[in-house]
Amino acid sequence: MSADFVLPLPSSLLSSTFNWLIQTAAFHRCYVSVALLEGFIYAMGGFDGHVRQNSVERFTKETNQWSMIRPMHHQRSDASATTLNGKALGEVEQQQKINK
Image (tube, rainbow, N blue to C red; front, side, top):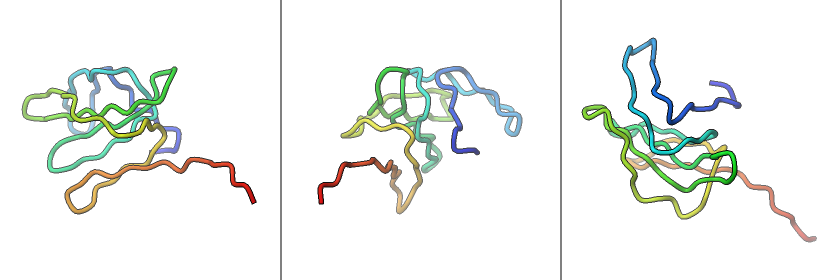
């Protein structure tokens, strides 16, 4: 996966590896953070072409459905995501002006 990878949500996806279709997500967005945790796929934040998002969606493979869950406290796009100790974590380094 390259650094400029864009997850094509909400288009339905076909994985040639697993041969399964994923249901349409609620929001069109790119630069979304994705993590797999306890059998769920989490799509966090992203960019809708105008603003960064704080929304979080969870995909349940048994029902083939995305559902909205509690949003993040801050809008994020281009972030890294991983899991640790049963939690999905993500962050993006933001440039800040530093006065010396």
